[in-house]
Length: 442
Image 1 (cartoon, rainbow, N blue to C red):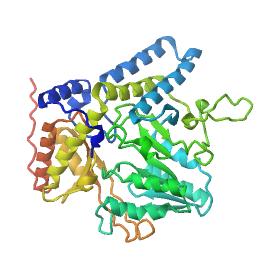
Image 2 (image 1 turned 120 degrees about the vertical axis):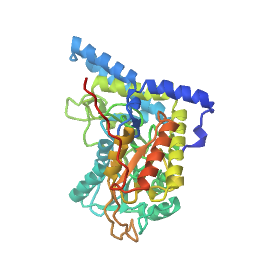
Image 3 (image 1 turned 135 degrees about the vertical axis):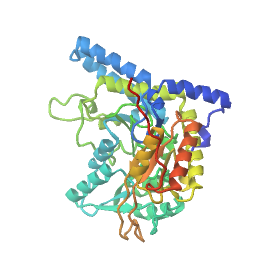
Image 4 (image 1 turned 60 degrees about the horizontal axis):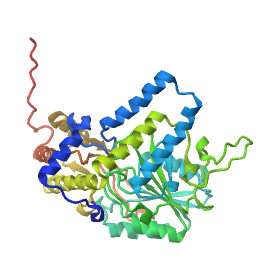
């Protein structure tokens, strides 16, 4: 749900419609269907493609191997760092560029000196590539991985207080690292991270906040939350480029008891280690690798800048949240529809199941009937009773995920509610057939 501290001055209904229409004209993909999957990849603004094409054409015409081009890579990275820092409302020295959220999370975890008997804390709805990588790390190092479920023994979502009460005791020694998403990529639930991050600071455990589904979709006071590492992608809610991500480190994480990179690109070092002695930078750039393409860097910076300056991030997040709230309230009142998060936990992602339907069937029907671009998310395996799940948690089924952005319209909300109502009143077998389209050949 939107943070009222960042709410922009309201527009009239006419002003809002005009602004949305103008912005949609700059996002061609929003005219191709009901675009509801920024949780995977957001729509690309026209000016981002134009900026990238300009760099591509320059490199095609004059090459990309001159020395000034190599220097320009660093300039472009710093421009992107500045844009990310402005988006987060944090200091530039705490921000670095990575290739993906998963890479940033796992590289940070690898930079902790772990020993047998240490513990890493995860949530069962964390992204599977992160969970799998941490499992491999545990196998190699002998650390224990404890998985906390956000569901109770019947599979229902825990309240925030219940989840926090379950998690806080596990932050005591021997826990060295806790990884948690700000917003679940499966359920769309906003996780109650503030008390967890605060307690971890008290116990000395390092924290990693996965911001894949939050940065660009909501405005958080990140300096107040102050996770030791926040990682977030460019291509989702920031409308940018695949293969680029941002990292924000705490000042603690830059200290001797923080993350020690095990690999660095040439920009991670204060000077080139020609003598074989690596001296890392003393700011967040120590976490950077290499292999960044100039067109991509330019595109990612232009996308985040367009969102901040032309759209207005407070307005964008408030509008997306309002549309998601309207959709959630409507579908939660339909018999046979099960939202995956409680109303007070909802984000701009609304995930749901419909009794009698498989998630892939819903994705197919929504695509065919409304050209809706949505996502099927997997179910979770059962968890046995353990420290992070006292009563265990049952396996869950895959679900339909919708991701609501500022570009969506009230008419699109109404159309989606209409279709969800139709599906809930039928099974796939009894659903009225779609009208056939006759193709005339002249």
